[in-house]
Image 1 (tube, rainbow, N blue to C red):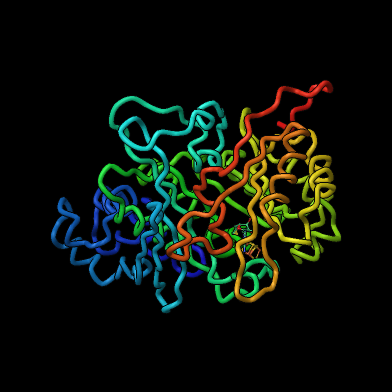
Image 2: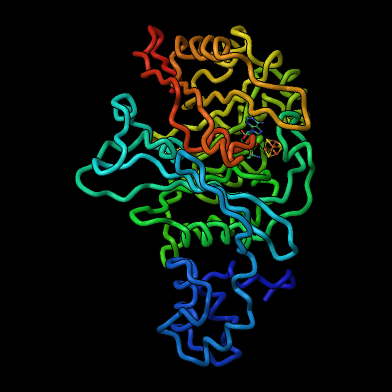
Length: 403
Ligand code: SAH
Ligand code: SF4
């Protein structure tokens, strides 16, 4: 045993369940079953764990497994997006969002354009770009966006969480608790296929808890999500990007919140840039052990008058040259705490045109779930079918396509 704080029950691995329950005389086999009930089946009520011995269910009862995943509110948007307000142990609340995607022939059909995309990264899977329409009654694929901190310390000027500041870190149990609660609320025909860490907070500023949550989500005896179906979005914490690359051999999808192509603009929008300027950030991206055919997602929130000019798009194109990326442009979602706002659509399209002409896959993301307030800053880019899509251009004469 180590001298660190005890691991919360929902965050235990099967081995840790076995160790924790051994003093109560529970056999390792039964302890592993508890893990499976929680993580593979999203069942946290011991009484519902029907194949466990009665005494074990009684042992589990006082643990209060459901405490990190009380859903205080649930709202559904017209587009099927569901926002859950999760109340944590201490009463703090965070949001998680379920985003149903397109499905096979029994559901909404993907647009012909989306079907030709061959993205293999999890972020793209959010948009079903990597799935051709299937045969028969396929499940409706759901992406869940989860939070990793209550608030955020990074202070990005266009972000509600950043303006509010960091309230506290979330435990791994609270991070996975959102997924357990989300899965328990899936509707008939739906299946959770992707998880994106794009909710409240900076995941890499809560590294240990985030990594434990990723290990639980990918555990073969639990939900068993493939790492490539999980995307971590970060404002660019360079040492932790390297650690994440090492810890998961590059298999976790990476989304980088760039938002500017020069240090002056980026530092103005995102204070973290003063600590890790673009030079070191780009070096970290080049060093990320990305598997073949995978791409890093570049998120670029367009803020009127701040970072939205065509020459800034050109600069961005130069900055990204040679990196395997796709670019998501997100017109800023207005927040109460700031006068900043999105550019008009003409500007957005002009920005996209420059990047497309430079050979990049570049998408404009529309907001989903606006009518239930799920379109708060971070969630702007989730699950959004691009309002405007362009098919990748042929390789440029110099052989570079931006991929
Ligand atoms: N902290 C991480 C993940 C959460 S934020 C990160 O910054 O990457 C997820 C995304 O939402 C980021 O790209 C962030 O820049 C963007 N975002 C935040 N506030 C926004 C807003 N008001 N409008 C549009 N995008 C916003
Ligand atoms: Fe934090 Fe991300 Fe918001 Fe920046 S954009 S303040 S890093 S949550």
